[in-house]
Amino acid sequence: MVSQKSIIFFLIISLSSLASWGLALTQSEIKPLYDLRELLVLGKQSSALFLSARRVVGLTDATFIVSDDLEYKLKKFDRKGNLATEIGKRGRNPGEFLDPSCLAVHENIIAVADLAMTRVQLFTSDFQYKSTFHARGLVLDMCFDRDGNLWIGIFSMRKEPILVKVDLNGKVLQTISLKNRSNDDLENIFSFDINNSGTIVVAFLFRNKVEIWNLGGEFVRDFTIPGLPLNPHKRKMPRNIFSGKLDEPPKDKFFRSIAVDSRGNIFLLADEFTSYPDQDVYIVDNNGTLSEILMLPFRTSYLSIDSHDRLLTIDESRALVRIYQLQHNPSRRSASKPQK
Figure 1 (cartoon, rainbow, N blue to C red):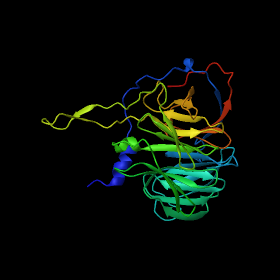
Figure 2: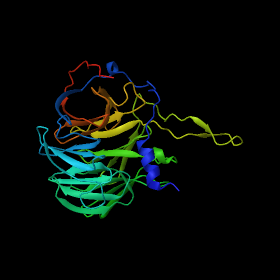
Figure 3: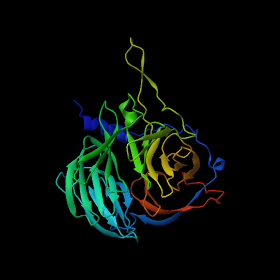
Figure 4: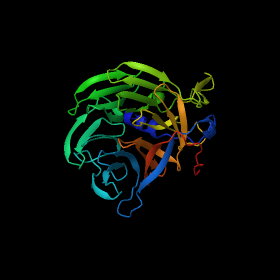
C-alpha cells in the first residue's frame, strides 16, 4: 500500500507540461512599482556548487542560508557570496537531513524541516545544533513571527489544512484552521508568510485563493488574484465504461511560492496560469489589489524576501541562487522583457 508520505510527496512535486492559459494581465496594463538590482549570484564558484538548491533565507547580518536537498546540507554564505560554512549529510540524527526543504529564520535561530515530514530541527545561525521536536502533521512551510514564535503549515490527508504556532520546544501555543478547505487534498497544499505588522498571508498553491489572518487567529479576508483563472483546469477521465466520468485532479500549480516585503506587499510567484510561467510575480496588497506583475529575468522555482528587502530567488535548474535588491520606485514606467 502506498504510504501517506509518498502520496503527499507526489502531490507536491507534480508539475504540469500544459501550456499557459494566457489569462494574466500584461505588464503594460499595470503601473510598475519595483526595480530589481542584482547583487549576487550564488552557485557559480567551484567550491560552492549546488546539486539542488531548494530554499534560501536571508539573515539580519546580511548573510544567507541555502538548503540543498540532494546534498542533504545547509550552506551559509557571507554578504559577499562566499561559502562560509556548511552542515549536513543524509540521515535522521541531529544535523542530518532527508530533504531539507523548509527553512525559517529569526535573529540567530534557524528552523529546518524535511519536506512532508514531521521533524523540525533548530540550529544557531552558525549551525550549532540546539534541539529537535516533531510537528503535529506533515510540514509544508514554516515562518517565525515578530515575537520569535514558529508557525508551521500542516497538511493531513482528508483533514483541514492548519497553521500551528509553537514555541522553541515545540509546544503548541495556537492553532488556526484555514477557511477554504477543499475536498480535493491536492488543493489544500499551501505556503505562507508573515509580515512585519503580524499579518499572516496564506496562498493555496493549486488554486487561486489567498487568505489573510492576524496573529490572534482572527480571519480577516480572502481573495483571488486578478488576471488568473478562478479554478484549476481539470480534465475528465473515465472511471469505468459504466459509471460516467470523474474529474482528474489538477496538475498545474497556480503559485510556486509567496513572500511579503517590509511595506506589507504580497509577492506571489506564478506557475502555469500566467503569461510567463515561473517568471511573473503578482504583487498585491492585503486587500488583493494588484499593483504590478513583476517579471523576473530568469525562470524561477522559489523566492523569498529578507528583512533588508532583498529578493532571494532560486533558478528553475536549482543550480543558481540570485540575490536582488528590491527598489520601490513608483515613477518607473516600463520594464524589460525577461528571457524565456
